[in-house]
Image (cartoon, rainbow, N blue to C red; front, side, top):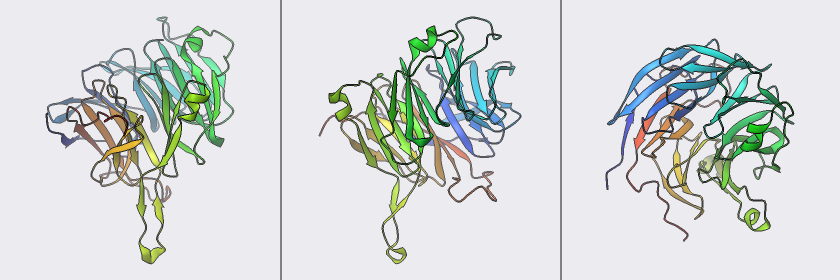
Length: 347
C-alpha cells in the first residue's frame, strides 16, 4: 500500500478561499476561487502543485466549478454574474446576471445543465446543450436565501435559510423550457442551525449537510419510511473548553463536506482547523488528520479519488473587522493511501 503524503500549494490566493474543486477526469487540475477577486488554476503532479493561470474578476468570487471539459470553468460572485471561463485563452463570457450576489454554481455533465443560486432568492438554470450563449436561463424562485448547492447524477439539493431544503429532479430541469418546475421534494433540515455546506453522494442515494453549530446530518433521497428512518445527525468539530472557563464544548462551524468518488465515504472540514473522514453507512469516524494552522474553508476530492485538496484560511467567527487572509491563506493537497478513504463496513 502506497503511503500517504501531503504537500502545500505554492502561490496560493491572497485572501479567503471560497471554494475549490478538482476536474472530474484524471488530469488532476484544481480550481480555487477567492475573495481576492481571482480564480486560480493549478496542476497537481507528483507531490507538487504548479500554478497554471489565474483569472481576475471585478469582485470576490464565491464559487467555481468545471464544465464539460477541464478547459472550461464557471464562476459565481459578488458582481452578481455567472461567467464561463475558457481556461486556455482566459476569455470570460457572462451567461446571466442576478440582482444580488451569486452564492453557488454547479454543473451537471450528464444533463448539460449549469445551475446558479443567488441571494436574490432564485436559481438560474442554463441549458448548455445548445451552442448558443444567448438563450435566457430558466429562473426558479426560492422561498429563502440559498447557502449551499450540490448535485448528484439525477438530483439537485438546495439548502436555504429557515432550514429549508429543496430537492429538484435534474431530468425535469433539463426538459423545462419556460415554466419553473416544482421541487421533487421539499424538506426541513435535520439540523437546527444555519446550513453551511451540502454534498451529494456519488451513488445518487442521498446527501449530507453541515451547520454552523458543529453538526453533520446524513439523509437519503428515497421517500419511504424505511429510508427516512435511516437518516441521522451527529456532533463533530468541537473542542473541550478549559475547566477554568466553565468547561463544556467550544463549537465550530462545519464549513466543508466532500464525498469520495470511489468509496462513498466523506470528509468534513471545520472552523477548528481539522479534517475528518467518515463512513456514512457505518455511522462512524474513520480518521481525523492533524490540525491545520487556520480554519478549513473548503474540501475537494480529485475525480479518481487519489487526492484531497484542503483550503485553509482564517474564519469569520470573530467578525469581518480587521480581517486579513494574506499570508494565512493556504492550500494543502493530500495524496491518499490506496485504502485510506475506504470504509470498513458496518460494525
